[in-house]
Image (cartoon, rainbow, N blue to C red; front, side, top):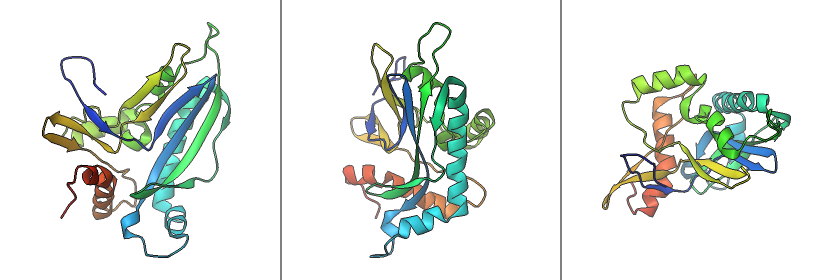
Length: 220
């Protein structure tokens, strides 16, 4: 992926999170918020991620904030929304996530056309999971505190066809190739009441593990 303009980015990775998919007037999204490192899981303990993630108030609040933010943005342009009351556990090679799939039928605009995948990506982005909520206030705080330019990290990446159908993911679990021998990796966490700094830092390292392994640059 590259961005237009004077700055050229080369982004490499494989996102686990679908921002939006639009097919024949139906919009679908997958919300990931709430994370558990698989490397620290007890060996042979059945139901460990369900017990830890689903029963953790901090993780559940983080996930619900992300769900509420998405459904609030989707509601004005849709009907028949389906959002589960309970998340499920998404198993990835390095982590488990609390995940929820949301779908809705899109409303046609005054011209009779449905919103396109790109239209909805613009409405959804940035999600609560990568910016916080409420969006404008959280974005202002992040710009003051982060002290870095995210570049394409956490932005929409995907495709759209001539009918407006398409799919966009969120640019996570990847890195930006800065030159032929250097890549900068990014990861982040949802900070809510109950967040512990050391645990959040450890979660960030867990999220970067697949790219570190792919680059043969595992932490010592």
